Image (cartoon, rainbow, N blue to C red; front, side):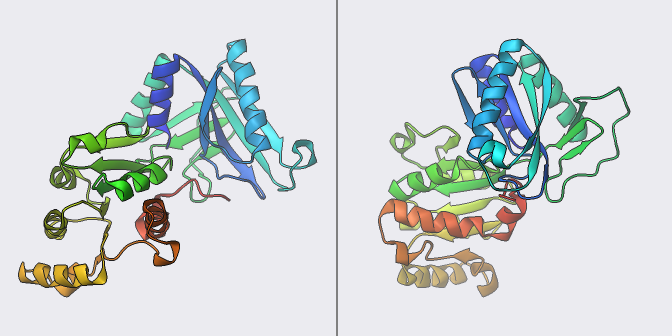
Length: 307
């Protein structure tokens, strides 16, 4: 389950919600198997894509909640009946979640790394896992099996205009866990939902997993350099630093003097962003986000790509 954190938040806030997940697709579909959304009487979050498909699924989920049912399967062709021309079809599983059911899901995921349950049909043993390509989700014989897919950590060092704009862009992406770190506590107030605040960029770097992406956009060049120095002493997924070519030339000299090789230093990108988009903070953030999402590690973690 890729949306486990979102599910926890929704259940804690609403008491119970309906989760709609794409269990399988055939032909052209707006999202891949595993894409999910949470629905409650007064709202929804997440996305299964498709515009009209999502609208109809949300309505079905609310009716399902009102009826007090536990699970339902909806098979939907993506054609004239929905005013769409995709030509494919999807299998949607709608489940009601409360604290009890969420606890059972978490326990199963912690024990085996996957959650298997039979949604429809006569009682049968769980099938051998035959996950949909690239998703890890299995739908067979009425069984839905979802793996635990941890989010890829993205640590943004610096909560100025660019850092906040970038965090706001990345936080809604379901496969990313975004941390925004800054030494200035006042810069971390009022962050959008889904962003973890870090009060010290150096500590956030040290606590990040080895696969994390690091974006260095602080207000202090000395701190930027120290972050680069420490980053090159540990494993990381990818990294970038905001600044000019001149700034990076000076950084390369200093990092070399600190004992780092050219090959090591070249793993950090600088400048970052797309100069063709302009220098407005949101424009810089757009360029950085686009480049970040093309990184191999992040592309491999993205299981919610449009089919």
